[in-house]
Every structure is written in C-alpha cells, then in structure tokens.
Image 1 (cartoon, rainbow, N blue to C red):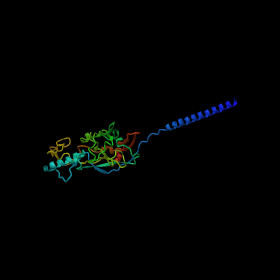
Image 2: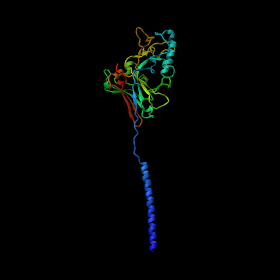
Image 3: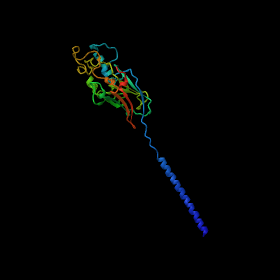
Image 4: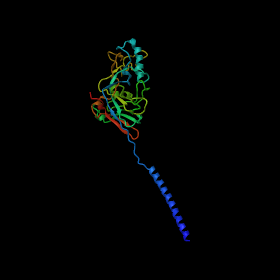
Amino acid sequence: MESTRRWRRRRSRGVSEIIATVLLVAITIIAGVILWTFHVYTPPQPPTVSFSIPGGGSNPVWGDPTDCQPLGSWTYPLAPSLDNAWGQAWWNECEYFSEDEYPTAGNFSSLNTTEIVFTQISSPSILLSELNFTFICNGMDAPAPYTTQNTTVLLQGTLAQMTWFPGLSGSAPAGPYLGYCGGFDMGDEAGVAFGSLFTRLGVFEPLTNTTNYLVNGDLFIVYIHNGGYPLDYACIEASGPYAQPWAHDNNICPSSGMYPNGITGAPLLDIDDYHGAPPWCFENPAACTIDISYTGQPSNLLLSIPVYDLTPPT
C-alpha cells in the first residue's frame, strides 16, 4: 500500500509541473502579444522650409497681352498699311501667348519683381496642392483713403493652381482671381484688375514641371509695382480683321481731342489695369502680409512675410 501511495504522489507532482509550465508559456505568450501591440503614439512632425527674397529683378508681364507688342521693329504712330500685319502678330504673340496657346512670345513690357525662393525643405513629399498662398491686406493699417476696419484677401490659392510656365505648360490656369486689398479696389483704381487672373500679381515657377512636390530652388515671382508703369499697347490698332478687342472702349482707350476715336496708334502708360502689390503695402510693415501654409496633416504656417520687406520703399 505504501508503495502505491508514493507512486500516486509522484504522479500528481509531475502533472502539476506540466500544468505550471503550460500556464507559464501561455502567460509569456500573452505578455509578449500585449507588449508587441502596445506602443507610444508619436504624432508626425509638420514640414518646415526656409526662404530667401532676392529683390531688384524684373520680369515680363506675361499675364497681360495689352502690355505687349509684336516682335520686330515698329514705328509709332502705326502706319495704316501695317495694321493687319501688326494686328495678326499681336494676336499670336501677345493675346494667344498669354493664354498659352501660342509658343512665341512678343515683346512684353517688364515690371519690377521680387522672388520668394524656397530653400532647406524638410521633406521631399510636400505637395504643391497642399501649399496655400494668401495675400492678406490689413485695412486698419492702410493709409487714407484706403483705411478700413476689415482685413481682406487680395489673392488666395494653392501653388499648384498658380503654377505657370508661359509658352510651355499648356493653357494658363483658370484661377484664382484677384480680390480687394483693404479699401483699395484694384478694379476701381485702375480699370479692370479686380477679378483678373492671379498672373497680374504673381506666378509660381518650379524648377521643373515634372514634379508635383516642392523642391529647393522653386520660386514665386511677385510683381511689385511700387513705382512706374509698364507700357500699354491696347489702343494702337482698331481696323481690319485683326483689330484689338478694346477698340473704341472709352473705359480703356478714352477719346480726347487728339484721339477722338480713342485709338492712339502708339503705346501709353498702363493705366487701364493694375499689376502687383498695391503701393500702400510698402508704406507700413503691418499693412500687407504673404502667408504660405501647409494644409496637409499636421497643418503648419510655413512662411509669413511682410510685403513691406519685399522691396525698399520708394
């Protein structure tokens, strides 16, 4: 009997050890799974960029065909015998080029510009469609008679929407369009700029048109217009099949004693519309600001540039 009892006790002890081992393995596996599935969440970091603002440059006013004359040598006032030749060349090289439908550019007038050049980009995957450009006008800081209580937006859109390689990239983008700037109504001030395409204020030009991402060296060209006007050719020619569409429009080509039909036959200063940042933006550092923000996740304000800093006051 005694030997039987001892054998049974030893058997019981062996079973207990096996069960303990199985439980220990199970606990180890469960603990491992818990540790494997548990991790600390670290939110992604927003992108950052640096920039430089080289000023003192000039660029053709590609977005305005009225500020363009055909290639070649022309003597003004234009002889009537040259109306058709001048008019046909103007449509191709000025109007259709501005719409990016014709590859050869005419002689576009130049205007002073400053470039916002992107440098030291923290990520190679910042989409141009997720970079928002906003030109903000602080009406309370505008000088009289443009002072208002409102903050307005002259222009807002993505860099993808404002990308244009004149003559190379297909049709010019369809928007965005210019709005108001404090109490400064660009349309009322100069004719037709309010509601005009963004190209009257600036153009985004990447180093290449083969990528949708921001890269070092991409730049935004801002027309400054803090003094002087480009030449305008809107009122030169009004006869024949290639007549300019503004012929006899007194809002653009006003009649006078010297020009009773509004057609001058010669270029004028560009007073029928407006280009660039309003001049009052250069009178007060707080008046106007350009913000460029990242709208992806997480969103981030990348740049905030006083327009005043884009060029010395004149």
